[in-house]
Length: 307
Image (cartoon, rainbow, N blue to C red; front, side, top):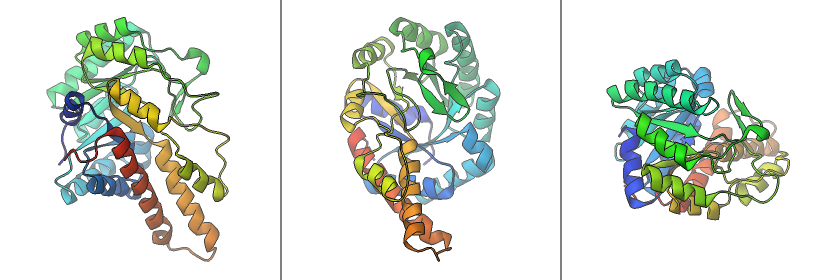
């Protein structure tokens, strides 16, 4: 059941839970997302970045989601463009069949971000498509977006209120201290929950947490045991994710966890049998491991049992 992003997130906003927004780059990852949603009875948002679209082709990304949505018609699912960098990129996604898009102009000055977002909102809303924007800047790397730590700025609640009123954006990603990728924190994790709560009160719309992979111990250990190196990476603890949801987060972006878990299982097969070359023998356990991770995350965020 392919629906708009706001249809899924308005329910989460009203009932106070978070919905996982899971990135995919191939059939196996997308299939695992749907299997997890089916097991957990959870709505889902599936995300393709500009890099994933370049890799798969936008027609393939949309086609795969439509086919899997038809296999699981009881699961509400939105197809979201993650970190669209221009009006043209967002328009292309809308025209191709995406039901939600993000315009990420957060690296521009506030007024320019606002104007770019207004332009995307006007077009997307005319087609029944929801829009996400971002205020503040996150550290780390997301495909072609790189932000140095020195340039990272947390969201300003006054600007958030002005931005939402002026743009009519459907949901907003506030920078509150997370970062993209596996290497999130130099010391102990710190998120500005007070700032988050103020932004929620001032905007009263669904909010989005970027850089929300947790890298649970069992995923880290599986990756390290097969020869991987995470260089002391730290994810966002489950307790922090739950506190963020309490503070008003309704969409929680998850990508790095999925990649680490998937590759850990592929390596495990490769290490255990160096004569193996049947791709299904590699990808089936990888899908199962990723499915387990996502079912757990749906429970943490509170979306399990919501369909």
